Image (cartoon, rainbow, N blue to C red):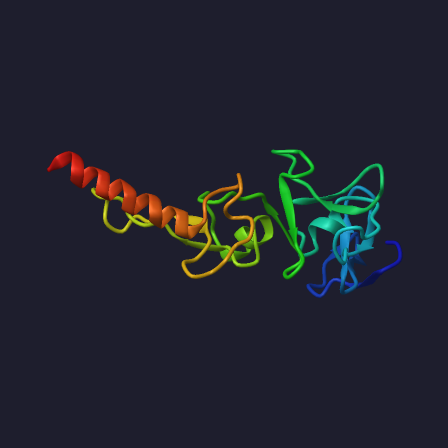
Length: 178
């Protein structure tokens, strides 16, 4: 085994041909790269030096990262949806997230904050009339009473605009049916 690892006898006492088996592990803050057969330091974030994807993926950047083959630096990347703007890095948590859109589905706040705005949140969509009880979709929204500076651009409507349109549609339906 190469540097950045610690080797010792197998705690289970395994032997091969009567000889004790030696087990090697990467030191703390290092990750095993099976292709290079070496332990590499886990990346600190984007632009960390790397020789393979393993140090990037083992970091908080997660599976949505890679070692750029040209620059040899870690970056956010989604192999299923490649493109410079399809994955966002969120400095606060050090994670890479798939890009989210206003009123698009989400699992937690950080996904929305990374792609859209620091005030964006992953909130339950208002149930539609006739929808099945207990089924709620979480979507990226600008919470009522908060300002999301880019929420009113082509990225999507502000919370105030959604409320306005909802009221307007309600008034139109009342007018049509009376």
